[in-house]
Amino acid sequence: MFNLFRKSSHAEVGPGELNALLQAGKAVLVDVREADEFAAGHIAGAVSMPLSTFQPTHLPRPASKMVILTCAAGRRSAMALDKAVHARPDVSTHLAGGMGAWCSAGLPIVRG
Image (cartoon, rainbow, N blue to C red; front, side):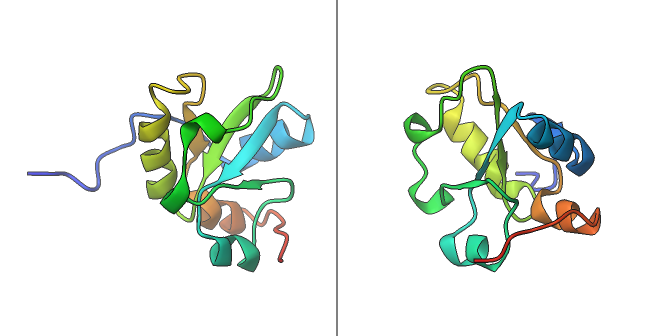
């Protein structure tokens, strides 16, 4: 039987660690939520790439920066990482707990 609640096999960063990486210019964040969710609130500087149209070959390729994925709670970003495993093996990390964890940590979001 499938275990929908298994621990992710992907690397994870917490909200504080992601915030530090973004502030230091060491990461690019890709948000795989749908456009309406992204517009309702996202992390400043995040790139919107909805999972419904996600193509790993279109992920950013920033020089010497990590590409980190996020979604609402971590499930869709893990699904996107599963899709990226062959095309972009360098992309292997997502935000643990997604935007829910980010907001719970009291970190800022941008609307629009």
